[in-house]
Length: 351
Ligand SMILES: NC(=O)c1ccc[n+]([C@@H]2O[C@H](COP(=O)([O-])OP(=O)(O)OC[C@H]3O[C@@H](n4cnc5c(N)ncnc54)[C@H](OP(=O)(O)O)[C@@H]3O)[C@@H](O)[C@H]2O)c1
Image (cartoon, rainbow, N blue to C red; front, side):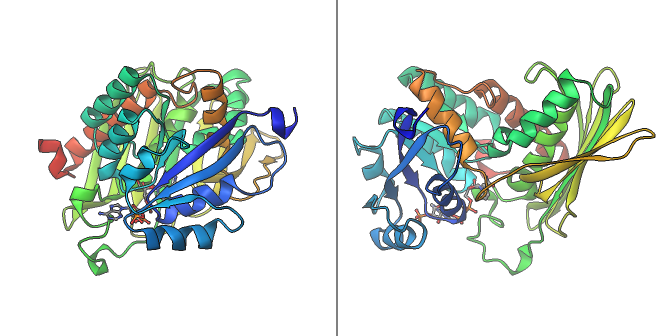
């Protein structure tokens, strides 16, 4: 298929922070085997100046329309899909506004602050018949697809019965201003929704062959400082005895081998910069040499989820099979339960 025959999508970017800069850089790099063509059509920011600085810094050679408000971007008829890169607490309203303007939506993780908000957004998207997905980009890595095939289809390490995954990222919460998204509970602050969601995702991907159908028991504890969870530890306990431990912390950086998957005849260690960005995994079967699988990844890897979205929309779909709405709701449900047991609360939980 030539580039001219690929699905094409015109994106409007909401918020000009760190993640939006990574996302647009990836969508505009030269790469082989692209699955779709992406245009950054517009940038929506709190000010035109900030939007212009973002475009000149991260989009050289491209000339998106710059808006000093999100509302103008939602109403731009040339924008087909809105990418939401604001702090979690704004995802619900940003998504509702985009949907009501008839736009498709790709919304950063965590999708919302809690399950109730997620259900509200998905119901609205259904009403407007637009595509919507949580931007859980890691699930779209070819590495993850290959790993799941080896574990669940080929049964390479036998039956998987235990998984550990950790995501640690040092953050000195005490020194941050109260307006920081890492410190303000009203912005969804805490390690769980920021990075623990990845640990939880790995445990689920490795332990569950049929996603969305299982309801493990949750046992969780959190260390709360300044009303924010700075560390969370979760045990997912499945009725047949499978166990998964998902942890996150702002106290230290996790080493490269962030995830270990244990089966009846061997184990797999997943390596990478962090649980969000896996780069390789190593299979160790009993009495055999370890076998390492490495994967090419130009840029960071956000284009895999973006390609999947473009292909779905071109096919007339309103949700994606790898990250469907039900799975996001299940994850939000688990996150709610973890916070209920651990103690981290957001003011919005009481609304
Ligand atoms: N997928 C990943 O690997 C990954 C990595 C990092 C973050 N994330 C997710 O992306 C989201 C944003 O994180 P980030 O690290 O990019 O945040 P960030 O650097 O603080 O940027 C967030 C942007 O949102 C807009 N915004 C609107 N109201 C805001 C407020 N009251 N406070 C701060 N910003 C506000 C701002 O853009 P304007 O001023 O231009 O409107 C700001 O630049 C979070 O939900 C996070 O979980 C995902």
